[in-house]
Amino acid sequence: MVKGLYTAAMGMNVQAKRLEMISNDLANTDTTGYKKDVAVVSSFKEEYIKRLNDTENFVPNNGVIGKITYGAKVDEVYTDFTQGSVISTGLETDMALQGSGFFTVQTPNGVAYTRDGNFSINQYGTLVTKEGYEVMGQDGPIELGEDYFTLGNKLVVQNNGDVYVGADYIDTLDIANFDDTKTLTKMNDNLFTATGERSEFTGSIIQSFLETANVNPVSAMVDMITVARAYETNQKMIQTQDSILGKAVNELGRA
Image 1 (tube, one colour):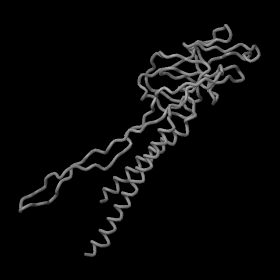
Image 2: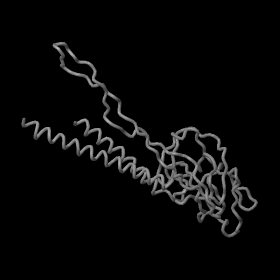
Image 3: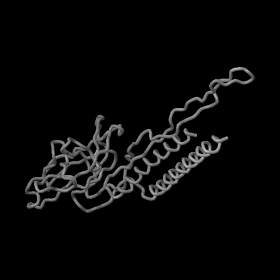
Image 4: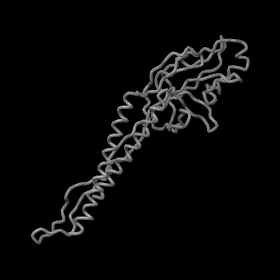
């Protein structure tokens, strides 16, 4: 019966973790380029149950009864990099990636990667993220020049990442791709760090568009309800086990 308590408690831990992840996904449904997380649930290793010091007709009977597991656990959490929908914004500093790949940005903690192409131009004429991180090109940060605002030339980004201001070529966006997305780790500010090798970007860049989060709010709400019910079921199992233990101690123990 005590094993039943532990099994139900582990089940509650699993559902609590899943509920936390789903809640975070729902909170980021309006975050540009956000990628949802998925939990991989597995069971603990099975163990054999054996009879100990048992006899049958004066003959030792210590064979295997069966197997038992101690419940489930969250074995892995991975990020789903499925492409989100793209929407038109009409802003020349907005960019969306079609296909796998990431914009490269420079942060105070080093190079990071993002799918969020909601960029702007700071007072120095540098292309930056919402947080002020510099967007990187092949030759460094994308510098449009301090006179960008006064000259009034249009920013043009071609499908291959070439950046122009008017007719002047500035640089080519540094788009990183990773064949093994498991080498990417989520950070704050919708960024990723990478430990794996980069590969060639084969997609395209769409200017004046943004990629939406790949979270379906309806599916997420259904999953949340399912998880909440599973959590409540494990709660009831613990209450039942506790009631049985109470009867075993208070009633059978008196007999």
